[in-house]
Image (cartoon, rainbow, N blue to C red; front, side, top):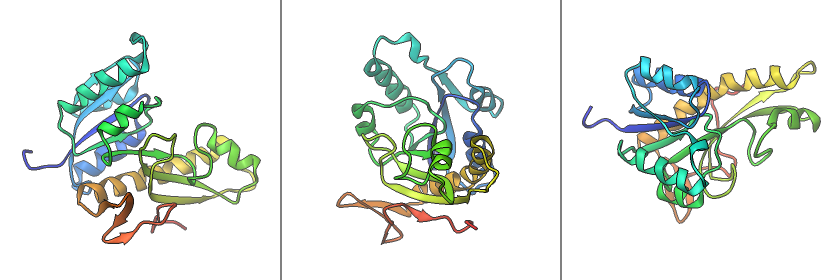
Length: 218
């Protein structure tokens, strides 16, 4: 796969978003190959999925490091061994240092389970319910030094039903996450996305401040 675009995936848990990316890669809709999967937790289920798929894996246990900076240095060095075109966070439950983010500027992507800029951080679904929002959703965005604050790429809206709780809402949002993340990754790998004067463009058109609205949204 010498000419194929290369992706490094970082995860902490079961790896459901990683699975959606792997499926897209296998059916040639992602535009690249996942060449490395790194976990920061020994029991992360995503590691076994990657190993079963024949993908190179690494475990970098953050609990073995005295500082966030030391962990991020080793993490970055391991990522660089794969020479990735894009680094994808797929349920990676670590706040990354500014130095790490700067090292992978404009090629570090994340998905967040809310309609950013609403509800950065944790407990997004319960916060949407508590505020009696009519919609929740998910946003794929580039990562910068601000928590969940990088430029949005693609956003999907999910209606909130009257009988929803945080668990049922999270399950429906996760379904659209699995659809929009591979699409946004494919946009990056195909060159559809570009930065000009710190603004994000797709196909020469400025991307809205909340990201492109997913066409599959209903």
